Image (cartoon, chains in turn green, orange, blue, purple):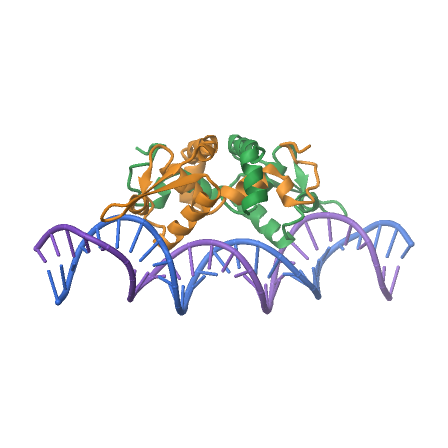
Length: 120
Length: 120
DNA sequence: AATACAAGTAACCAAATGGTAACCACTAAT
DNA sequence: ATTAGTGGTTACCATTTGGTTACTTGTATT
C-alpha cells in the first residue's frame, strides 16, 4: 500500500511516490498554465497562443499533444475555413482542478509575489 | 487587479499569472518532492538523498539552496562530528502544503497511476 | 597510516528542453 | 497573382538542466 506521507519512507522506484507521479505528468514548465487557461471553456489553439504569449507554437503544440495523449485534454477539430481547433479539459483533466486552484491561490499570495519580485 | 481566472485574459507579463508565478517558484523537477519529504519534520541532507535516490547530491544541494533563498526552507547546521545539517519548512514553506497535499492526492488517483503505467 | 563519516563542492559532460524562422495546406478575398 | 488566416510541422540551434566522478574538511576509529 502506498500512502501520501513519504517523509521517512525509502522510495526505491521514484514512481512509488504520488508527488513524483503528479509532477512527472503535469510538472512541465507550461502544462499547469495551459490547463488553467482551458479550465473553464474550450479554447482555440491561436487563442492559447495569445493567452500565453511567452510560449512558442511549437512547444504549445507539443504540450497539448502530450496532454491529449494522457487523456487530460480533448482536441476537437472543426472542418471549417479557416480551420478551427478547440481544446478543453476531459473529465480526467477536470480532476486536476483542485491542484490548479491551489497553485493559483498560492501564486496570488504575497509570499509568492515577493519571491518573484525580490529573489528571482 | 489580478484575478485567478485567466481564461480570456491576455497576459502581457507572464508573471501577472498566479499559476505562472507558482510554477516558476516550485515547478522544478524535484522541488515539490523535496518539500514533501520535509513537510512533517526536519530531515538531514543524507536522509533526503536516501528518500529521493534518483536525485544526485549536486542537484539536491542546488535545489535546497534555491528553496532556502526563497525562505521556503530553513537550513540548520549543527557543528558536530561528523557534521549534521537539517532542512525544514519555514512558515512560508508551510503555506505550500495545500498544494503538496493536492498533488499527492491526485498522484494517488487511478487516473495518475494509469497515465504512468500506460502512457509514459 | 589508512579509512570512514557527513555534507557538500568543482570540473566536466550528456541530455532534455525551449526558441526561431521558415514552411505547408486550404480557401477566400483583394 | 498575391495575401491573409488558422493550426500546425520541420530543421536547426541555444540554453537549461541533470548526472558522474573525484575531491574537501575535520575528527575518530581501526
